[in-house]
Amino acid sequence: DAGVIQSPRHEVTEMGQEVTLRCKPISGHDYLFWYRQTMMRGLELLIYFNNNVPIDDSGMPEDRFSAKMPNASFSTLKIQPSEPRDSAVYFCASSLHRFTEAFFGQGTRLTVV
Amino acid sequence: AQTVTQSQPEMSVQEAETVTLSCTYDTSESDYYLFWYKQPPSRQMILVIRQEAYKQQNATENRFSVNFQKAAKSFSLKISDSQLGDAAMYFCAYRRTNNNAGNMLTFGGGTRLMVKP
Image 1 (cartoon, helix red, strand yellow):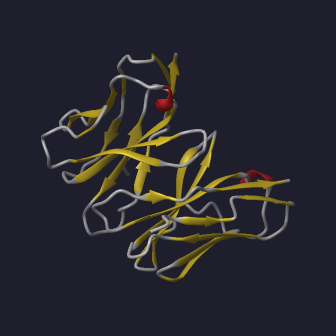
Image 2: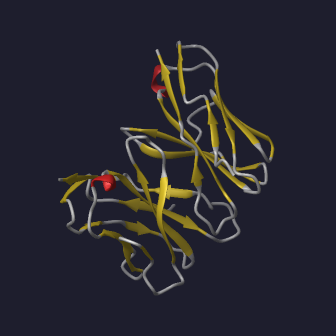
């Protein structure tokens, strides 16, 4: 398996624009996580899914953020409108079930100018 | 809510020496998993080692081992024979395993490890 695949690797956008981050989890994994990493706040969980169903979205900063998982092999994290404080590295991770470690994608570095 | 604390923002070690990174956590659960992840400058998060809370034996992976003290809620990582490639951020993580909501990974703030040649 190719591992967790995220796209794009880097994204630079202007304030107010819509940004969509994409993730393909490892085949067969039934958990999918979105994390955000910043110097100030470290690794924060934004939302996670189990069998494509959102379980906990309490980490989503505000209504500008939304996440979907339309099927077992694809998830998106959307920010609309984007703001400079959204600049961070966004990681997607998946795990086989609740007893196992999560495998991470390489992250998307988002810069909002 | 579970919390994970890494009290050492930075550590340094001489090449070939041994270093121990500290981690404590707070939970009311009895069954859970603990992990150490490594994040090199490439920013890829790499699993180093995992420990099941129900196992008394400390996990070991080659030069990496843990000291798991369940009663003290402590989970330290020992790196033996440190190599230059071990230089990275190290994150301790906790995951509860019950079937209710809350099965996410909770991370500590990280420890930056520098290895001196």
